[in-house]
Amino acid sequence: MRAFVISESGESFTSAVRDVTASPTDDADVLVAVDYSGVNFKDSLVARPRSRVRRVGELTGGIDAAGTVLASPDPRFGVGDAVAVHGGDLGVARDGGFAERVYAPARCVNLLPATISARQAMIIGTAGFTAMASVLALEAHGLAPGASVLVTGATGGLGSSAVAISAARGYRVTASTGSVDEAQWLRQRGAVDVIGRAEVADRPERVLASERWDGAIDCVGGLTLPQILRSLRYGAAVAASGLVAGAEIDTTVYPFITRAVSLIGVDSVEMRPPQRERVWSSLGEVVASIDLEALVDREITLEQLPAAFDAIAGGTTRGRVLVTPTPR
Image (cartoon, rainbow, N blue to C red; front, side, top):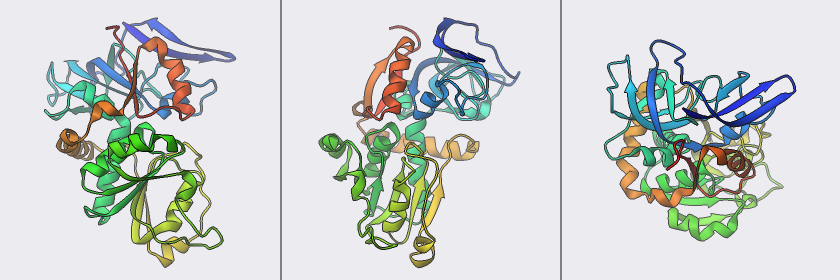
């Protein structure tokens, strides 16, 4: 089968499409025929020389995929079932979705709702899944429809999904982006306002900014997250899942002890199966309200992955990059 293989040994590094044989890691693995995969920021990190994210010398990349079950020892999945595959060690420490077939642990496999096709599942992808999980986390904290929600990194895969999903759930979305020329596109996705990165918070001379947001979804991290914390309304929360701008944050305790704000971490890698099922079920409920095709930046082949990694890492994409492992 065709697969995009990343290989590094000593000073030698290669990444290219090869013909390989899919092999299970465990007898309990589920075999899936991949219709689509997607390119994530994490994939670009895995594909770098001396990657700190990739944990093995050679593997097929791709942290997510969607398609149909070819074989399964797990009774929850039957041959022909439409599934999404993501999380765990896929594309990081074991072969992932940039291939025509992938073996995955059953805990990383989810049946797709009847309302979501394999293509739609990868337009959603890990990015959209994380966005939905972020919205659910804010709702569990008390966010109610009609509230104001800030979404950072709004033109990226996760951010654009968060804008569309939040709007579909009835929130007033402000999209923050470094690509303010994409304001019209973001408004078409559901944003009521679009601001630049520097406009997240005001009063830089004070420890706290004006109270602006009932909730926030941060896909960026770095210098942005402290500014969100400074500008949340009393009792509000930010769901954080990104580190595109950096993994360290420099903040004070004032937002937490003066305004009782909360910082909620959102993880889609080791999320337990019942939670995963809830997220996909919630996505199935809102998918009809979202123009998913408008979230597609481009559709590429395996051979075009290196250029897509550069675009993702450089922040020049608008929405999701889909991958078709089998030439059409």
